[in-house]
Length: 225
Image (cartoon, rainbow, N blue to C red; front, top):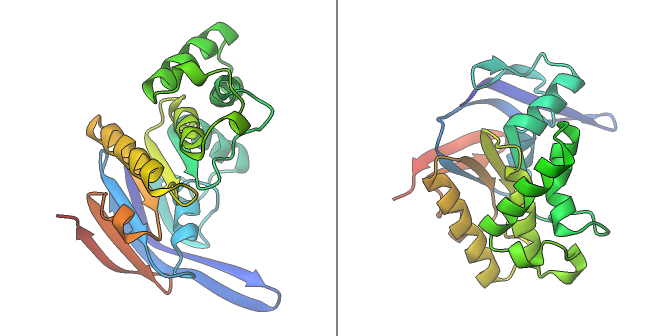
């Protein structure tokens, strides 16, 4: 699914060059559930941005499903993000003036799906995440856990090859966070590939594989028992 070889990522902060990734190599097979942990500044978010085609590596190779991503232009990367990758963020990133249903429909609008099919698919996914009765509520009328469920439904709407989650429980209480992790486990049991960045070790240990980053390098890569 994912094959990263010797990826480095450098940024300029004023006149200072910052090396966020320093030659990372990584393989993730289809159907794996991987958590990425490490201290602040270790390169977790940069690695996630590269995997999610939100950023290009400065050097090195990134292949998704056997296709090289690093040489694609912005339009090609946007197409990959829309069709092959689902994103779940700490802050949910829902549009506050749109209903849960309309938020879930959004990625399909960019994919050119007909309105009737958009509605049917979005309602089905909201039912799947336990929010069928809240489909016409705006995000401000939903709890944090419910908003994250809407975000997960939106991430799944185009049947992506993998789901990327960046601190998905960071804004939730422990109960809501546990419910989201259980949902991820169910998705993974159904064959979904998941890569999750988290600072919470308890959340990180819920995955089947744990990567620990430090100073832009993978310090450890272990199976979770």
